[in-house]
Image 1: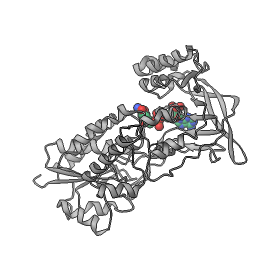
Image 2: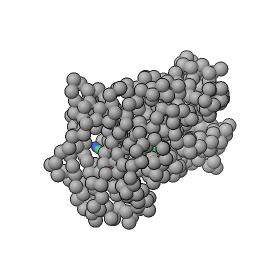
Image 3: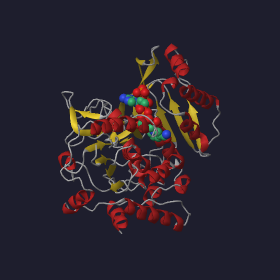
Image 4: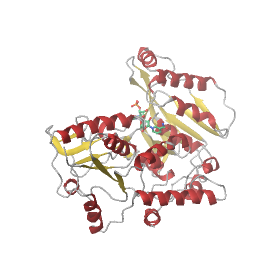
Length: 454
Ligand code: NAP
């Protein structure tokens, strides 16, 4: 193909940036525009990774190197669906890759889920990570000394750790001032994490589980129920080195005497949450059904129920993607139907020029690095379609045509240079802070846009 390939990627998180990287490293003459709803790039690295995980945030350095390529541009504060639709994008680009991830909580359909004091993990994460679109205040209840976290994935661990740490422990991180102030009102002393299956079925990763005990203010207390491993559990431990390590760490916690720390994280196995108990509209407890391992890696209910006096419940049972304008959606799996790259219509035929990568493609599982192989698969398909002449050429292929279109819509979009200004501003706020912090995030969207647009 002699013409230049023009690609729009919707979503500038790791999935979108990896796809841009792979495209621009290919043999094709290609330019890429990343279109992002947030005024900033990096998606869940900025607004999903917990603030006390600076190691994961280091990935940003590699993503910045990708973005320094002149063939890649960034347009932030532009919402696909509201500001732009697929038909419009197709007039400027040969192909559109959707890398919009998963931003909200999967529903949990149990009685009491709407009580005051019952929260979704994604909402709490957005709050402590300073996302511009959520309230600045978190509704910590002064009496909520015992809280429950449902789900034993890494998000559950993040939530439990942030709730159990003191606000001042988190002051070394990049949390905004309103979050530090908010966390001071958190009364939680006992954080109870509930797994509906056994220790060999948890979704934690070993390093994240080990680090739970690194705070001197927290005792990790693993409760013994569920440690009688059945054949399904033994299979899971034999099949995965990581799962074995996780079980080893849990077993070590089980054998450790609490040190008498002020805060405790309890991990309970074989407890399936069935109801959130309320009084006067507020959470006063959690009811679980005790389960037993059934030999296959699953569990069955025993008919025995337990009530736990907790004053708040956080569900961390997985994320769910937003449906995207103009694209089909599989509501059960929470993904855009696809064949490993192309978006597929309900009848199974490909939607021309539309591709997916990352969590919107395969569901909200896997670590950030996994999105690289995903992007590779999608980009390979896209390039094959281009080479084979299967992509319709856009009506307005010149690069500036898209900028002119955004201007004509009156959108206050941010650019990569704008992000660099905001980045510098946030680092400056950290440096001049009374506690000398690495960064302090700016939260209100209008402030971010104003600083980025200089
Ligand atoms: P996840 O790993 O899929 O864990 C979800 C948990 O919720 C599982 O324990 C699951 O139990 C449980 N669950 C689901 N439905 C439930 C129900 N109805 N009742 C009770 N429990 C239920 O999801 P995640 O924690 O949201 O993490 C998403 C991805 O991001 C993962 O790949 C994770 O590793 C990654 N992540 C990584 C980090 C990090 O620090 N490295 C931090 C955050 C997230 P079952 O297994 O029984 O279904």
